[in-house]
Length: 123
Image 1 (cartoon, rainbow, N blue to C red):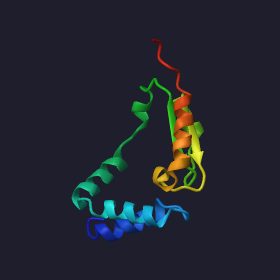
Image 2 (image 1 turned 120 degrees about the horizontal axis):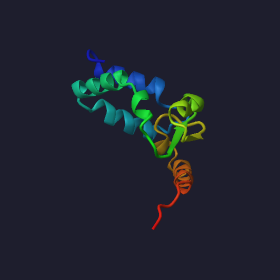
Image 3 (image 1 turned 135 degrees about the vertical axis):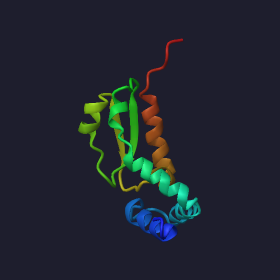
Image 4 (image 1 turned 90 degrees about the vertical axis):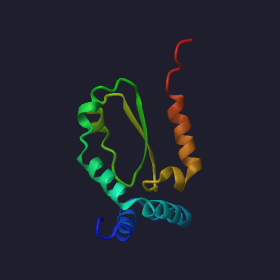
């Protein structure tokens, strides 16, 4: 990526983050934003993300976690619940990584449902 940021970023996103049904306008928007970012900063952020181990802090979370994930890559619910028993997920079938952009209506419905499952705080 450091040698050909724009080319490698376009290739990675195209091969890994879009689904076959990702609308062309979403593809264009995502690629434009991603490839116009600072290569040095973007590569540094990707390196940091790849080196980050999320498992230790997961044990500290005491609030419910409601994820909305696409089914492009499996969500390992069992593994997540080993670390955070209060983990729950809604899967959005057929979407890629940018599910909130690919199908905002369906995403918003899943988000509204997830939010409705939270208890109201005492008054």
